[in-house]
Image (tube, rainbow, N blue to C red; front, side):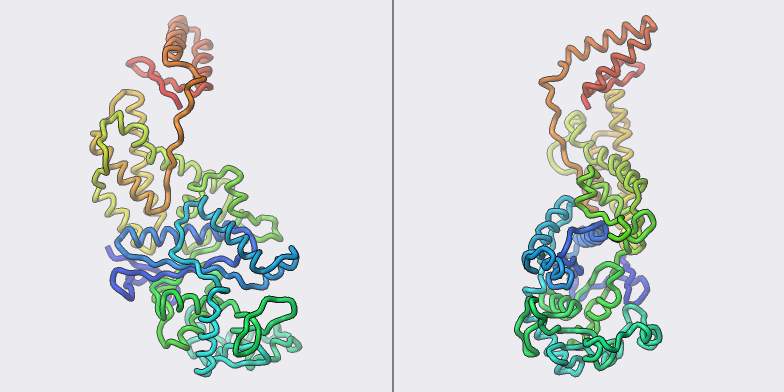
Length: 481
């Protein structure tokens, strides 16, 4: 059961082989912290959270790094509007990021480097590029000489010649930045300070780094020259990840990453999510509506991670229903374990089920296929739970049910799906057991007298107070909801 991954770089599915046996170095291009995280961020963070969990499940030691871009024009613009500072805006939305991710059940990364904390590494990398002839200064700016890197375009599949043909009519030759460049395709590694903007001292004068160089430096500083997995959204393939490769590999002459993985985008009712269309949904807006965070995870995991996904009311309703099914299975042990005589401790897992789950997910992180295995287990446990409530016993042996439940809990945990045990309802103000039995007796008398309206009224009255009645050949059983 070899894990195979679709590598954006090679455009094919390949067996997963790490730089160092048994260890994975993984970097995810995180968020630019100028606003609250939206559904696109939710999808990416959930996908790479589950990828990391799965790699750990199959035995890898994973070092997972996720950065924060805390230097950016959007952050500066927001700070200007709010009469604040870039640092204050970044800190506020980093705090909000962790709040949102905690609600979604995202495990924290091993480290969260920030661009502002990596300035020495950024300047060192720019200096090395300059010494090797891949970068040049221009009036306080420093640019990357794209045509010096022969493999430019290998990730995105774009050719400079093709891009040149379509770019000529979009170039503003009067733009001061354009006039500084030796070639229109060159991009900024360092930007000279502008009035009123934060700046750092450098060999080229005060200024701040370009976006692309930040990630190259953070990867190198935290994980080394070559990592195993570089992950991010498909919108980052060009130019961000393409430029990362050009910057890093020009200096090290080594592959920046062995596998480039990209998650698909999120649409809302078939359209690209944007503030101008009024369909921009933040994570906290969605969860504050009452949508269960686990339903959001399930919604994300029902689609193959590389494909686009469409957020609709119908889709989230289906995911919510699906989560209720899995949740019932996850709660089975807490509800019925004592009644079934389960002992304390963890039961052995169903080896064939785990093997089928792993064989499915090993095909390019096929999480939808893995969910199928979970649904089978959950539905079976739900069926046995219903039989137990109706008939007082199960068709499957208690030991086997414990193994099924433990397998479901374990595999669901790999996908980050966890059911919280809700507190027992307060029965002090409700009906006592004796009062419930008396009501059931009244209902039985009404049924014998064929007064079905009264029978239904009593049943509905009990249901309204959280008491469910279950009629069978052996009589009427009841339980508190």
